[in-house]
Image (cartoon, rainbow, N blue to C red):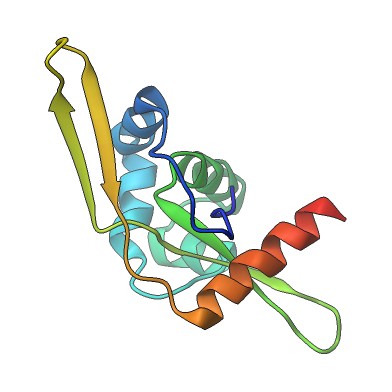
Length: 125
């Protein structure tokens, strides 16, 4: 899942978010990411097998807790890096006694927004 390049993004589905936060491997990944990392780097840092890391990265990006950043290289071999895409997750109860989730996100630099748009273009082609 790539962040919306226009910056218009809804909060994730409640169950998707809870499933990701309930998963011990997903929590281990979130705990270890302090800068953008490749799947291989995450696997090495967490001692989680690479095949499992890819599944957990999918869960975390679907829950909009991680963003995918495409590192464009002149040789054409682009690299995907993953970075935290939230500051806070708030769960609340509405007046109708339904759960509501809100995710606070960090400010995005122009470079990050460009990387997001490039990632979106790559998905479309």
